[in-house]
Amino acid sequence: MRCDLPEPKKPETQTPVLPATSASFGRSIELPLRNFDMGNAHERRERVMELLETVGLKPDQAERYPHEFSGGQAQRLAIARALATRPEFLVLDEAVSALDVSVQAQIINLLIELQTRFGLTFLFIAHDLSVVHHMSTRIAVMFRGHVVELGRRDEIFGSPQHPHTKALLSSILPIDRPGTTPRLDHLLTGNDHDDLQGDATGCIYRHRCPFREPICALESPMLAPVGGEHHVACHVAHHSTADWLARIPARGAIPDGQHEGNEFNEGGPSHVVTP
Ligand code: SF4
Image 1 (cartoon, rainbow, N blue to C red):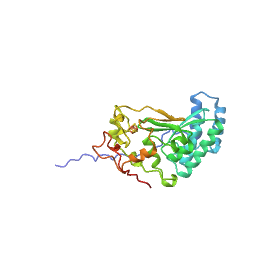
Image 2: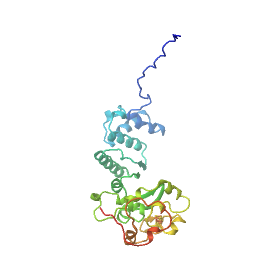
Image 3: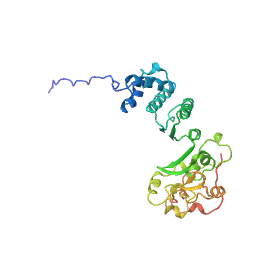
């Protein structure tokens, strides 16, 4: 039997429409001023022009939209916006990580210039160690949300004490790392599950640490001074470099079933891998 039901209607194709709330550069910079009820419309407009110039953008770019600009220009907009209310302290979370190296350099130079000009303090969050070295006066090294080492730049880069800091610094390419710093970057890829299990009882780093002692499974180390402004959260941070090097295991993951105890503390030949 034939059924003469009409063909189902095909859904109409719709052209995507950009959200009407997208704000122009100028409007975007002005918003914080409006939020904090700063100045009248004319004064806010003047301030927007001043901020555009401060971050190296042209006043006639105020009416354009973020999607019309490069990553570097968009980052300048973000900086202008952050400066709008004349803050003293800025949190810069991975502020240059998404940019090309040459644009990174421009933005970093801009930030340093603005810091000097306006007496700003930055909390600069980054994974790129060369950027950290360039930008920082004091550095806090973190592992799974815990500060494991804290100190001045020369203390952290010149005399790292925590195994995680040593592993991070050893991951820098040899061209940036004159000398014969041993490679420890294999410690950067540990077992996430084990790391998180370690939270409750002992040192959070113990499951990937070749230097651990029995106490590391029992007590979580507190940040303690080791000289100058340098602080480290490690039970054995006072060991000499020679001691540390003698305990470094071969490159590669710590073998399964060897996550407890101090099997790496038995002495014997070191397996230092140098570049
Ligand atoms: S406290 Fe122990 S496990 Fe933690 S980093 Fe220091 S030596 Fe390694």
